[in-house]
Image (cartoon, rainbow, N blue to C red; front, side, top):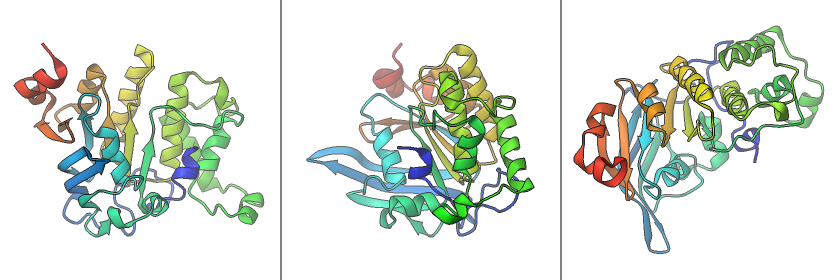
Length: 276
């Protein structure tokens, strides 16, 4: 399913800048944009999440790592409303209870999610993909008769430069490399002005050069958006984590948390995930 189907028109700051971390209606006065508290998810007796608690600060880039089956995808499903927690609470800002909101309401509130496999409109140009993702009135009549304003064109140009696809505006998205498609989809997310971005293994299948460029891109977004990155590539995580917090999940709960150096030296993390 396309990104504009799953996350249309999020609430964000108005104006040409894509990078404002606190949108209208999102109360982040306490400094955190996401709270998960004692989240448990049961599937036919299997505990996919087990009293999971964590929070993400405004403008933070948080890396989530852990073995397969640790609960990383289920956690993102809870945040985006795809899965309801069996017990526990999930809040966006101080007041939005995600467990009581539908998926489209969560998208409108300002949470954007990118899945591992890129989903772009391959028969449309790069420019058209960004235009289709733009936060705007998606009803048929306004769309048919819409004309881009200079401000909207400026915003698309800004995103094109950010994702390094300026000069490729008229190229069909289907002709892009795998990494370029990933960047385009991140650009489509940014067009929707999300306050919190969830990225699921963004560098899977990328070349070394594309992986390095993606690290540069996320480091540029740091502080302008709150970002949660789920990834297995430890070299990439090291590059974007810097002195930020890395959370290690195991069996549905937080096993360890700290700087990359701290989690890499944690005997529990070494045993269940990193190895020696």
